[in-house]
Length: 56
Length: 245
Image 1: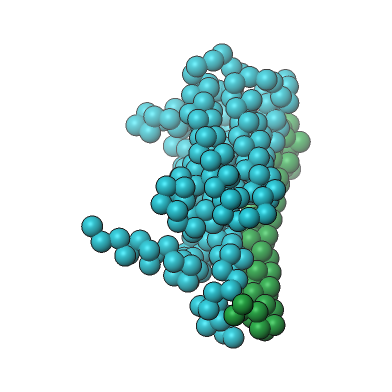
Image 2 (image 1 turned 90 degrees about the vertical axis):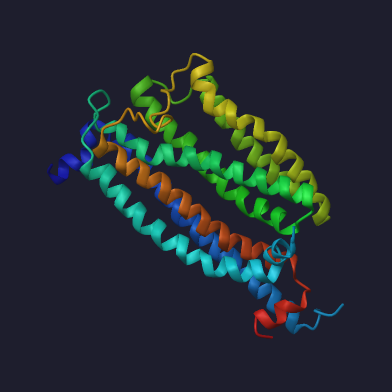
């Protein structure tokens, strides 16, 4: 299969590529979002500990 | 029976550390298997004799649809454990899983529309499979909205858990919808594992993607659970040692 044929997907390119792009973007996005969420929660907890609010 | 192991397992410090250790063991195999599955599905698998190259959408559509149901099942089981045994960690698991499940449900619906248009001639039809999957998306969104609308965390946990558990009736409806009702949606290719209706070179990339997506979810769940534990245990003394303060 040549490269052009691969990207043409037998005429289904406008359906196949957006499907794959959407799901791959979702996989990357959710992984990054989870890491960011954890980092924020960690920073937040550290701030609270530094502010001396850990013994109410 | 001695249940101390369960309480140790479900204790926030232990769960926080365990989730941190497990995440890369799920994440890296998931990454490698997704690459392999994409290559197998897009390059190695032959075109379908009816749907041509268009059938390749199955390699992202079916795993997304599988995750939409698997994550809901995980969420509902965690919610039920939280309700029955009053284990807060279980509620944290349910809360951490929901947004990921909602995204996969959205992906299943969107890739389904992109597959439906060329094969059925329509983006959307109000048939049993598609409608019950849309209801699944609303269950996820309802769970997330309900939890965030209640200030008190314990009450939010319990209210969300009841919704998640009740919503579980939708899972068999989604699965059997293609058999119970007349529908445009084709029946599952994989329901009977002993008798697959797909050629091997088409099948292995699909199985690889299904397994890889499941591992991916486990990895993301571990990281989100850690964030959820930190938010819930903000005043606990173990945090001080854990975070080096």
